[in-house]
Amino acid sequence: MGSVGAKEVPVLLNADGLRIDGRRLDELRPIQIRAGPLPQADGSAFVEWGQNKVMAAVYGPREVHPRHLQQSTKAVIQCRYNMAAFSVDERKRPGLDRRSQEISKVIAEAFESVVFAEEFPRTSIDVYIEVLQANAGTRCAGLVAASVALADAGIPMVDLLPAVAVGKIDNAIALDLKKEEDNFGQADLPMALVPQSGRLVLLQMEGHMTEPELAQALELGVGGCRVIHEKMKAALRERYSTAPLAAGAA
Ligand code: ADP
Image (cartoon, rainbow, N blue to C red):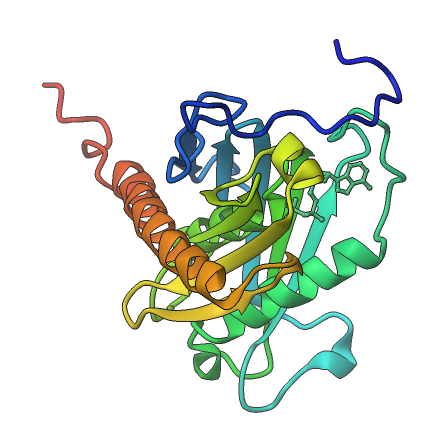
């Protein structure tokens, strides 16, 4: 247990170039994705990524609530990212705060660039993301979960949207920061990629990086996204390639 209130910055990178959890700079935390854990929803996914645990559920296309958000030419994508009060060590105040509103907005905008919303005018596609346990990178874990949930719901999209954060710790660019690295590092750069085109549809940055560092971070992040994309596809394949029901036992 760490000393309460201690301010000293932990060593984020040791002499061997390894991080506090033993990872190399270009290594992701372990990630597991399950498609379809909530049969009641139209689509769902559960993501365990390092110590993050995130559930996503998708409903729709369905009637728009509130009604005035309805658009005559396309579906409106509504996203609600929420961190459970018990998802962090210090109890988080429940409910929507500015941070969750911002994250909900950037995630909805990311999906707007890949979902074929024109196919469902006057409807809503509702995306719910519940963070049950948070350890940095939850917007990326939420995006990955929601993206698999959208596919599970059969929503037509250009592609799945893998996401990952890259950061700067002890002056080095590192893939997929965990909590201590996010807290004591120098920068955090979450991104989401359309794998097919290589286009980034979410890119945010907190902290400072030089231009060459930014280029390195983007390259590392895109590589990370491609690995995560494979895991997303595998989760969907696993869900939909199960043996036929009642496998004909005579
Ligand atoms: P992300 O989770 O996408 O990295 P942030 O960089 O805003 O988003 O948050 C980093 C981490 O800080 C979160 O994953 C979570 O572990 C922690 N955190 C965020 N908001 C709170 C909060 N209100 N109370 C306690 N911890 C929080």
